[in-house]
Length: 340
Image 1 (tube, one colour):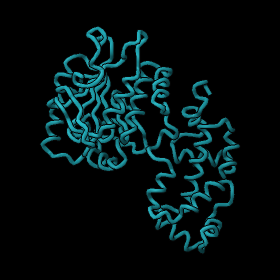
Image 2 (cartoon, rainbow, N blue to C red):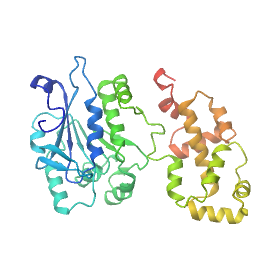
Image 3 (cartoon, rainbow, N blue to C red):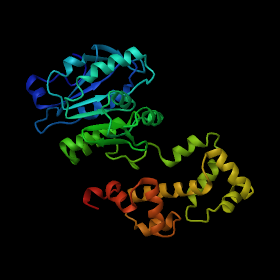
Image 4 (cartoon, rainbow, N blue to C red):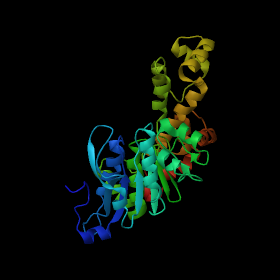
């Protein structure tokens, strides 16, 4: 196969397709490259031909090893960018690569950043764009483990650590690894409409818009990470099953078979947050799922999740997600495609 991918098109097909160049390098994450590539490859024009021409490129061209040891065939970036390019994406990978290799990558990319209609990154590829100044003055995201570094080293970039992907003008950045596929689906939707993107998502057995799409991690997963010893796993299960009950510190301490004072102290030490804050997060997360998956009234959801009234739910939801429950449902609810 000549240099990989959807290069098996004849000249006329290539001219009609939107060209996407994905830049890779030694140690780049395989899924950062192949995930978006697969999504783009699923799109067909009305005549049945591929709607995108996806080219893999590296500074020097040739076979390039990914992080899992699988080598990918690439074009020289200079050759890949010879014709008009719609979208240029930089894959993520090992952020501690040798300085010389990173310098070569930056130097090779710099001359091409202004050419494409869209410029973007997958995962820690955002750090490479940031080093070139391409993200200055823009909002951006990257893998959760690198968000602090991006914010610290590049103060001119507004980092959104809880976003799956971020669009800021012509700049697109995505969070960790699989989020590159979410971003590719959004690009497909922008280019060819909702129906086309939805069909691709169905073919790949993916959400078109991931539930809770504003967070890289669910509340439960963040809690698993912080409560590394799992001391309060059973308590969290009980809370989730009793969100509409009394979840005060005395009530939770009774379930945990601890004194209220000792429970509050130990819980904070183990999880890094107070019991009250944890309960609110779990209630908000349950409300979020109900907003996405059901047509229940917001007042009813407030009751089911223990907020009592819709105003308390609204305030907590805005603190957690930056938008109201109604706005969230209109964007992510199951009825959004029918104008709900």
